[in-house]
Image (cartoon, rainbow, N blue to C red; front, side, top):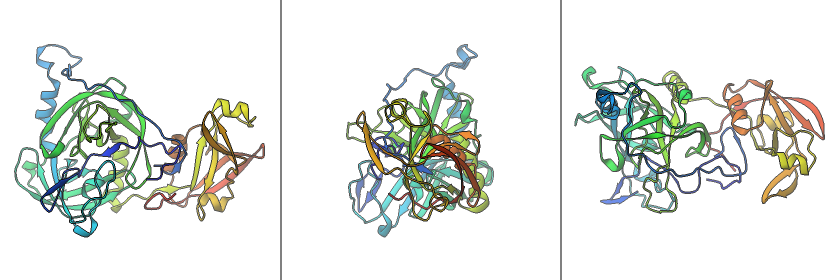
Length: 404
């Protein structure tokens, strides 16, 4: 992944969870989205919570909510094994070291979403797989799964198995927007191939941003200290009501170098999941609008020191050739300045509104673009050479992977 300064991704030691247990000839081996920027985001590790989750209802009968959730929802969690093709095997190490290209087996997690046998998991658990086998709940029966559709930009994939109704226990998707810092959560999955493992913790932070394997940014991510490790990828993160509010996808491994849990995990929010599932069921893929710029937010000090015409907005840093932004004539900055150790390109357009919505942050602009379809028009209010002007951008289709 490119090491741009404002890419809104988790630090270098972040790791994809799924597919981390890989047997190769008998050996075990283990961003910027619609708009990118030029500085890394960071996350702070928190100590894992080991105390049981206690229901607000109180009383001895409701004390062990984790046990209740496991009994009610554990049957809907899937154990996934992907047989990787020898020619398509990739490094699954969090550090990206080259590995043998001899193929192998990757393990991960998933969960049932309906009575028709659809299972959701992370795309990186099944990408490049020649064959996918699934076990449901506590059953030891293997079901061959087919990929209904995949979305690398959100790192989600939808599978389908032909299993009897008695084996299918769909989980309910909750509202991730209602989660708050400190709310209790439970993770169920298959860390290191240890199937049907449950852990508990809290929501450590909300509105995080992580980088998908193809380089695009995933916004509104939930951070948790519930112990999740390699193999938990694609498994559910559940609230106290047993509703799925996130799909476990990545961990921060810190400087330990062992790739294990340090109390910082990340889950793709359920509200993003709902939108992706609908499109995967309908079309097998997700069509995302794409504007084609990199940008960085204006800081108060930057506006003051360099006398910018506005104190909030996005500085256009580069424009991708052939994109809608290029066709609309958006201008990138060409004069490099350094303030407090950070580099900025000034002299280009400053975006302050997108479809009448103020945009002082990258995630806000990404949200506006994400609400559009390829071919839609996006009305931008920009400042160019100190003067306010209107620019209409015809949005393109997001490329398969981020370049640059």
